Amino acid sequence: MRLALEVLDLRRSPRQLRPFISDPMIDVVQSHSRSPDASRRPGTAVLQRLRVQLRGTDAAEVFGTYSRGARILAFAAHMEMRRVHAGKSPAWTITQLQLV
Image (cartoon, rainbow, N blue to C red; front, side, top):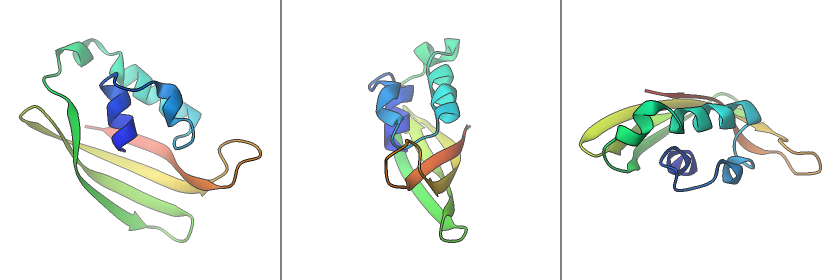
């Protein structure tokens, strides 16, 4: 999640998310970082709390909060153990992401 927040702040390239997040979710993070509101956001996004609820051996719900300046914001994600790229071992991958 910290990497995704750094991409939102334009501190990292979205390409660096590829091993950890599905392609459709990379598009979500990129579009969120390019929104007109992105340039007016006060402060850097900083991960505050992260909670994980396992849903079997190959799925998990992840949720928590992050701060941006004085504001506290929330996120939720669904992760699955899957092979994102051919030839690579399965790894935990963000398949759904909601930023509030």
